[in-house]
Length: 513
Image (cartoon, rainbow, N blue to C red; front, side, top):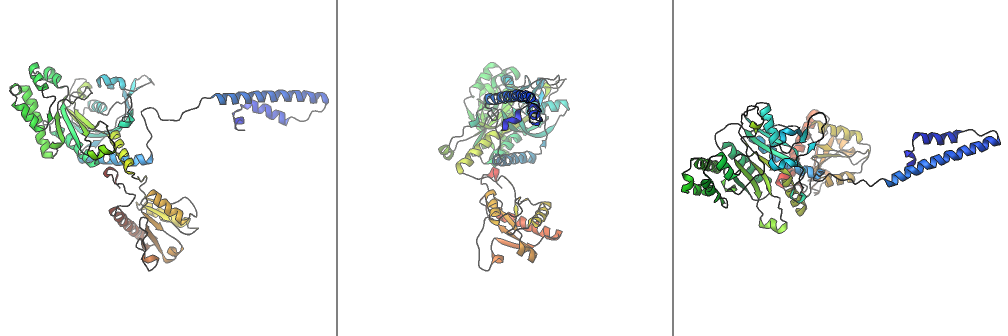
């Protein structure tokens, strides 16, 4: 009766007192004892009934993740980590330093930085006199960090979660909790050089992920407002620029705008077009000009952008379109925000900044869908070697051997059983994709050797066990020298296994072992 566990201490004491009460000496006492016993049983029955009723009336609890969030399984984490490794390695290759900021900020730090999107912030309950909000992106906290620490120049990357209280669209990789990968260059430099590097980084990452053809659209933030109010252009000149909004192209479009007499006669317009022409010259030197399209119709929603903005879109190839359209929107975006740091500085000192953000969740969704279509398997561990035995009572030898492997930097596993069957051990290696097995048994111990077997290959040639093409015998690692020999041999075998494209190896470049 599991419900008895719900009884309070008083009910249990009442029941126990009746069971332990000694027999009564007289008939009158017996009647009184019987009456008291019946009353106690009635009390206990009432308590049990109330407990049972409360248990039955308890509503069913639905176990699920909050709206707009998701769990990541070990298979998901393998793919995700490979994507992040590629992105971060690119950031480091360009000299960026890693940093982190709190997951929540003072609410006043984040407000009035995102325009209409400020209503999508997650506000936290007052827990000690401070009004807080979960960070909406990684850019505003970075600007706050620069102003607070009076940093004038910095090239940094930041990978972290952000939260937005918007309607999630799971089929497009859009969540309320998601990861951002940001790269930013802060400081006063010559025009367009940092901007060109940001676009170069974006191209390197998207090319490395092998998601397919892509195009980066580039424009100015709020073109007409920027030209008339901030740059001092005459309205008719800004309207002439507006005629080009429906056009898009590369340096040829910029050259065409240079030839327009109404634009070429305006100093500010010429300066802006000169910057764009210079940018395309740098992009040509970087070898990515064909991936950039100047498109004045592009508009980013965040208020803090002040200059060049850009978004990367995947182009649907015919083969992919025949399989399943993946309309996920932009997979990377960024731009220049020269005035954001000055909003935090008491004296309004500005630090020009430009940066980009990689849409990890959308990229992950694309890779995940393509893996499902191709039926690809994912190794959830990086185990290189499995320690096995064909005989009983070899637990101590296996523990000693696997400890030596771990100490030598080799990723190894074994079954947590005293006497596992060899077939069970080999099946485990096949199911988890472990490429090599180190076998130690009575014969190996007697000869002072251990046997290494490739799990993928099972071909044999005549001559017995030592002539198997998928086995190698090595001296037993009873010394440091022998263990180094084993580690060296295992490493060479692992390279051979990888070169031969082990069947459990992933074929997507972003997730390849």
